[in-house]
Structures are given as C-alpha cells and as structure tokens.
Image 1 (tube, rainbow, N blue to C red):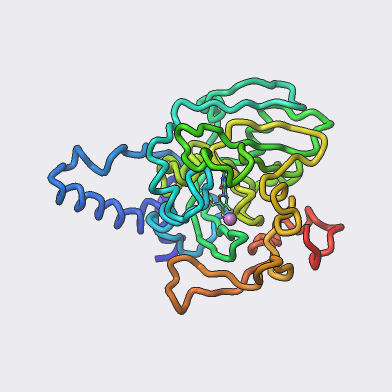
Image 2 (image 1 turned 180 degrees about the horizontal axis):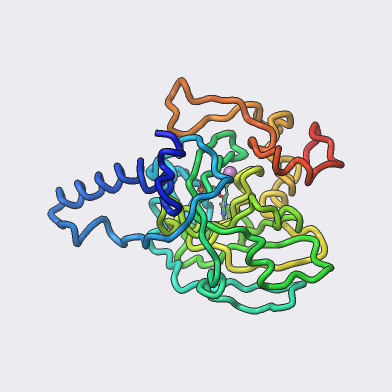
Amino acid sequence: MTRDNARIGPTIGWSQVTPRADYLNRRQIMAGALGLGLAGLAGPAAAKLDYVPSKFSTDETPNTLEEITSYNNFYEFGTGKSDPMNYSGQFQPEPWTVEIGGLVDKPGTWGLDDVLKGITLEERIYRLRCVEAWSMVIPWIGFPLSALLEKAGPQPGARYVAFETVVRPEEMPGQRARFLDWPYREGLRMDEAMHPLTILATGLYGEELPNQNGAPLRLVVPWKYGFKGIKSIVKITLVADEPPATWKMLQSNEYGFYANVNPKVDHPRWSQATERRIGAGLFGGRQETQMFNGYGDQVADLYKGMDLAKFY
Ligand SMILES: Nc1nc2c(c(=O)[nH]1)N[C@H]1C(S)=C(S)[C@@H](COP(=O)(O)O)O[C@H]1N2
Ligand SMILES: [Mo]
C-alpha cells in the first residue's frame, strides 16, 4: 500500500491502517488468551490523538510499533536497548509541566494543555538515524517547535534554545547510576529550532507517546543524529550562547553540538557511511546514509558557511 492510498481523508494517515492494526489485533488475541476479555486490553490504554497528515512525511514504510517501542535509547531507564521498555512502567507522564524561560516575553510554567492549546497535531513520518549507525522510520504525532516558541515570545537576543529532561531517580532507575550527568541536556540554534521540520512529538502511531519514547513530550530533529532528540522535556530556555549538550559534554570529539547526519564524517570509532535499518532483516538491512539524513533540500541552507567534510 502506498502513502497516497493510506490518505483516505484529511485525518486518515498511514498509522491508522497498518501495521498498527496488526499489532492491536495481536494485543487483543493475547488479552483474550489471558482470559482478560476486551475490558482488560493490554494494560493502560494509550489515548487516541486527533491529527492531520503532513507534506513533510516520508513515503518509506514505517517500522512496526513493536520495533519502535522495544529498541530504544533512553539512558534514564538503563543503557540496554530493551531497558526503556522493561523499566519505564513506573514513570508517570501525567500531569506534566514545562518551564519556559530565559529570553522570552512570557516566561512561566506551562501545563501540557496550555502548550497544546490551539495547536493542530500532525503526523510526521520521519527517518531517525542514531549516531550508532542504526535507523528506523517513525510515524510521530507532533507539532512544530516554532509554534510553542512563538507563543512564548522569543526576544531578539535569543540565539539558541536549551532543553532539559526530567530528573526523577525514583521513577527512572538509570538515573540512580551515573552513566550521564543528569539531567540529559540538549540544544539547538534558533534557526534550527524554528525550522518547519523540527517538531515536539506527543505521540506515535496515532496514540500518546509510550514512556520509552519520551512521554509526554520530546524533541524530533530528523536531519540530526538521534541523540539531539531529547525526551521527556521539562525545561526550555532561550539563551544567547550555545548551551550545554549531554553527549558533547561527555566526549566532545565524538558528539558535536550540530550533529547533522553526515555519511562523510565518521565517528572516531566507526563509519557513518552506512546504517542498519532496524527490522530490515539480518542480511538485507544495510543501506547508505544520506547527507542530512535525506533532508538536505530543506535544511542545507542553514549551514551555508560550513565545510561538510568537517565534524561539528
Ligand atoms: N533524555 C534522553 N533523551 C534521549 C536519549 C536519552 O538517553 N535520554 N537518547 C537519545 C538517542 S541516542 C536516540 S537515538 C533517541 C532514540 O529515540 P527513540 O528511542 O524514541 O527511538 O533518543 C534520544 N533522546
Ligand atoms: Mo542515538
């Protein structure tokens, strides 16, 4: 089935067709087998979201919900790929507030409802390329970060945006160890933050974000390595100077601030020329990595003065 076939109506996207449906059926079968009946369907039911399709979506086939929710990086829950799935069950993404401050006209602590007021959610099917050289295609539900920044009223001196993840060691077992210097922090230059491809995601596959994917609110910047996509955001600060970023602080020769996907600049310990598409099979899974993860037509202008053969 093509994307166009899936766009039956204005609010019908790929995710309402397959493979989400297959997965739900399996969950129902499992619930039935456990004698729970329909009422007991698979634990806490994720709320369905209303959203519209987007011209920015790729027509590549999305990874399955199982792949997207069982192979994760979210060190707050442990460093193993299945740790976030296995150890995020206690995490409480509701209620949620985000503190917006720094160089803005309307600083304050915003409930998620205030953040979403007047905003139309969109389905954005994006490629995600992790710096570890694996990739997926994920049908995010979200909205442009620019819409929130405009609500807060950026002041002229704001040149960067800084983000922080929540710190809750009681709910996040990984934070009881010092893998990283918590909170996880990331940042964008203002023009990157305002770019129409840059979104805050509140869901995927048509439902609220699973905890392991950064509930209830996470950043997605599809032309950058996945580590820029900070999860479970509680603080957004507009600032004048480049803010601290977790991986850069840890190892600045391996993880840059810009971290644009670039097949020509290898990681010091591995090649970035190719990537393993999760779910594509043991032998068929490697493909060439694209400059800016294939989003160069939209974003290359942001980096006009930069030498694409260099590490940033
Ligand atoms: N707070 C926080 N955000 C994070 C991470 C993390 O460990 N902690 N890992 C990053 C990395 S390395 C990647 S590749 C993506 C993975 O997102 P996904 O698990 O939803 O696919 O989240 C990013 N955001
Ligand atoms: Mo990553």
